[in-house]
Image 1 (cartoon, rainbow, N blue to C red):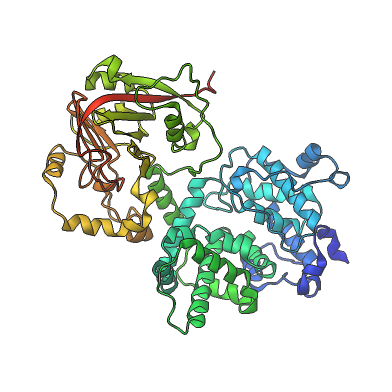
Image 2: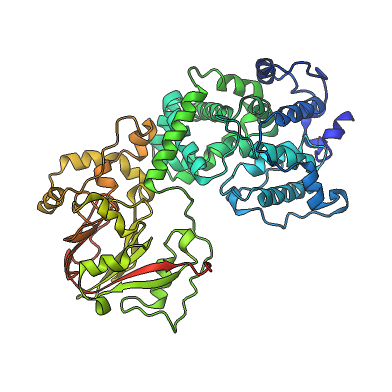
Length: 569
């Protein structure tokens, strides 16, 4: 069969009707608008060889970086793949976030080829930090490649696309996470009924929407996803949004039909909802044809690339302001404490190990470095600042006269406090957290990370409650966070997950000559006076924490630890 020129990796027995070639055998146009029309109509959908040739033409036309690895580079590195035995035992790069390679209609041994291609890509694109869609894209293009080298070149060009305003695949956690938020915006606006169903049934809407790309690139049957790929290679990233919104619409229709038009309004664990959507998408071929899916996707009016771009940029800016730019997941990283050199009067080596398991991953291999301790440097806030300035982040540990131990991980250099003069103004990022070790161990993260489901209720609650006298003192000290102009955050964020009073929920850390404060909004997680002798703790909106110890306490000992990069020369 002629298709085998472009299908040496394909298991033709799995291809169904797609294994039968019919229809046109060539495309005569080079006009982009005509390509767009033909892609949507499925002009080359019934001819595997023609589809492969069109993909090659479209991908070669992608504007790329000056230095983009091609097929020759792959052959130089890997040698003759035909004589080399590949293996799926080689793990995929961490940036795919655990996503496996979908087999679709590949031969079993072709999955090993995809593994090899992705690992080679990882070596040539060291700037990729998060790219969960790469396994699916690689698998799909392998169906239409002459050899591994050609597939490598095609994926490389997609990754290296540098056309202004054109987006093909997320390559950082910031881009991926903002795309999930953007999908939430679009679902809320263009798929209101289905969005309401998810809000009503899922405990964490953003967790459900974090799978939106996988619905399209991973869960869709091959017959459907290749039709999406036809249009995606012509029109770009926005196609994925359109198809995902269409899938959400069909999912709601399916749920309403299965439950007699009532729908299940009882909230369930988000993982159950995610699994239910995944099962529906994988089995969509029984009720929805590929053409019907695309018809639904492109019937959404006023869904523009400009709107998507603006939402994406706004959401990225919001995440950056919150300090959420990398995925915080704990790997098996151990703090190599040297018991001969580590010495703390507040925590044991084991307790410091436990604290290290909480910190952002990029600091996990650093060694603790004692910067300040009241037992050596005295009880002076000025000396506290002089020893801590220039260090970022820092770990604050407190032992009270009652024997309780609590503290905070503080993401930002204390020197930032000087920007507000002697006024107490907050700074820091969403990586800050507070904790207690004794009498029991517990960490309290920024509320937007730890309890997104509480976000929508906080503002209303704060408006109803009258401020305590302590809060009034706090407010009189000008604990300020600049108000964000209306419309800066996307509608989905402000309506659901970031519906937070910015003055209350961005109060991470603050200090002046009189005190230091951690956490704010209806109280402070920690307040310490200028003599580092007396402190207060209470619930606060920023971390949604209970008091970390007795609400008013005397400080027995206070330590501040920095992070020493052991990899630095």
